[in-house]
Length: 447
Picture (tube, rainbow, N blue to C red):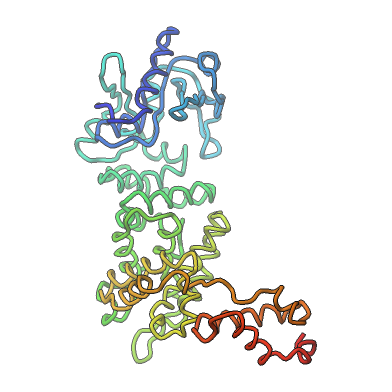
């Protein structure tokens, strides 16, 4: 295992181990950071495993938070970051399918054997500079194989989220899932529904954003998990599309193609890619050709329900739903009235919409004419022309003698439309426009 270059967390983690050793305890780096270090990948975090009891760990470090003291877990907080320090343990039964009913503090061998996958059950001894492997994890890494530690059904029964974690790790690492492990996933797939919505959401988001989304979702489908965690997406399988526009195949294959084209996506963008055509199964018709009329609106409703089910934040849900709802609208951009187009392109989610539509085209017919037109428009249009300072405000209407009320928004919207169209250029023209369209003697009637 080689130290990662220029990562201040590495010496900090070694310092934690050194302090524990100085107090007479055994201390090793553990889990994913060891795996990533062997692979030459920058670890997302550094975990330490030790024979020190939680209370001993708390006494040794000035800032220490007991995030799971009952399970032997303390969080040591240093300027370089937060580090989980876990006491070597074995686990009792998992009655709730997530947490052990009790733990017994043991040695590192027992600790390795209670972990989920062999590649996550490795230790690194910084004193001897050696990797300690009690479960053949290094051989699995050489074979590019993901395998549970011990009996796979038992591992998945302990924590049902491991069903999804197996898919995510295999896709992220480019590994094949061991046949016995894959068989157990298929046989226990329905149990994943017993996992909390928030934990499922977090795994789905990681699959979408860690760089191997296409492989992950193809595996979710092949292993029988997709229909349980995302039935709306599973229903896209086998939904035929018109070959002239979608030579790549059905809706699910099209979506997989888009997932494979994403580059460092945000969670909201990635979810929108996954769900942009989720309304097609229920809107498919066969007339002159296969059509999906209003699938954008149907998809937006399904996306909203799905995001609420998985406990996405309101802001994230709104962003995702807007992308799904508007992904067919971009085609009309070149023919839009200037005021409508300018309002459209200044929406906060519009850059994501352009990229979503680019991937949509690239994963189907490949024609990017509209995307290129929109990009030219954005380059050529000065920012002040997209959202110019208002020519009049509510205070101006009061000064003109209008009574505040619902009519104000109608007037201000109409003035901005004319301004965006280029027909009103200054304050005087705006005042004249308002007086001509809404004479003051009629304003009370309009209210």
